[in-house]
Length: 397
Image (cartoon, rainbow, N blue to C red):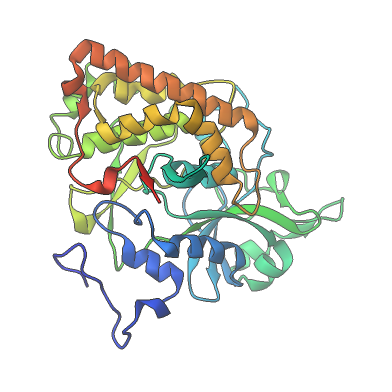
């Protein structure tokens, strides 16, 4: 495998050309210390295409987790995690729902991938590439219409899944699978008559090849109906975090700030843990996995998601500049997102009020940063990370 050099390529024995590899393997090979994929990696667009077009050869339920998810294997041996549609685009999370009993939304997974990456944006007279958040920390996700009979029931060897298929009174094919929440006849997923919409997220390399470390998010919620977490009651909580490894050195606290902004823009309250690749130690990025609980409410901004930023008052310069750019009329976040999401097979992905909510939340983030700067001074808040061209905000093509 790759021992010391981050750029050294690993070639399975007997193969000489990377060109002959399937796109999922090209994606895996491109993962490095700083990102899941490089800005101009053509294998990513090709992989997104594979997710919607490759023949599904087998399906199994994913164990663990509270809601039903399926592991789909394709003809080229690639694998992806399928989250079925549970809510229409217009539905909001009911106000009496706790964050931990909210539905996981397939369209939130797709939108999170687009928010995390980049979009090609055509300006008058010249072509400019604008990056949305340009983190590249979410594995590729695409929407797909799946035939429940041919592409799930007929190709699964999972008896437990197979047994939950039935035909509804309206003559639609339905199934509910096995899980701890919402896996019952009442919460069955039904086709029209047998088509179901869902998101497919490309798998990361097998854990036997690329071990991942799971970290408890210091700002995780209590996951209790009455209890509050420590960060909710202690305004100096960040000082405590900053004295604890791995937050006491390196870039990890800045990575948490990036993740905080990402989650606040989406309204995702469910970031209880995060993962990193073990091989890269502590000096590496956070993988933004599992974003299905974002985009639940467009009429409410959950300010508690922004607490880490308010308490720590730190942000990367590249992130700050990008957020300022996305607040400008000509590079408006909602417009860039809308444009990017149109490329997905099951577009429109987000209801317009969700897009508008992102612009509103962006203004809140920028206000939080400017309050921090006023309080602590620019140099104490904004971390200059412009050592390489990796962080360029716009590049002319």
